[in-house]
Length: 321
Image 1 (cartoon, helix red, strand yellow):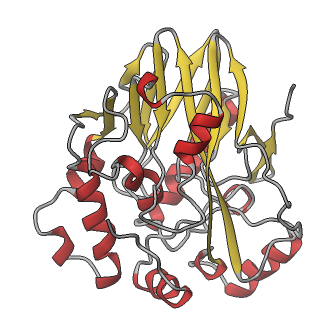
Image 2 (image 1 turned 90 degrees about the horizontal axis):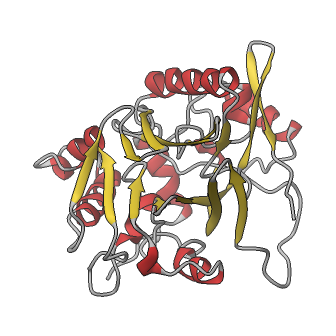
Image 3 (image 1 turned 60 degrees about the vertical axis):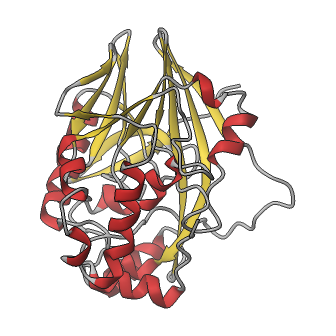
């Protein structure tokens, strides 16, 4: 099996060639890594739902992929004010595991060992959290970028959760599975297309295609959140009048995307649509008092959204023991 291991130059070329696609997220604010590991999962409840955030590791991408439609000096000033690296964007990878009724749903499957070697920890961390692969009943994919779907295959190219039902947005499936797509995109994106198609075509996964507001199981539905990719979806959990929205990469920076929703990132495939989607789900989160989980937010990535003048702010939730 091949692993995509781009150099920094490759990542910079990708960001330039796709005014449209990065895997951006978060950087650490001047803290060094620990000698021993940090917690790999975080559990909490939402009404009757038992929720666990499980890490797949982290990604490091060039900060030049952030705010590509803004004045670079303003972007650098924003990063400096927030104690973030001016050169490296440090992203966490936060997977949601939902237990509601008899359903046990995993949102996204990580990148396995096919992308960057700082990620691919999901299976080990599921084990650490006491979650067996064969107990997962449903797998929902927010979109088909490497860090969200490339981990779907095991070493024998078979679905890594063989007993699960698999779900993806209908528009997302239609985009990536276009005949001849790899020859129609820039060279830098061809591996993304091939990887997405190989993942979707994995042996043992029969896909159910979702549309806006469709339920996976009672209490868990999806909403269309296009822009980052054409058919990106978010997953909404609702129980006892409480709601959580796992936004995938529709929001992928816990500071910049809230303060400047119209600043788009290198891997946002449709910048204008990305910005419109962000404003819609930010308003939804505030209006409906929804908890938000960001895939690339600082672990565990869970919090509330508040208005801040004409923009917004992410307020991380406090851990409870």
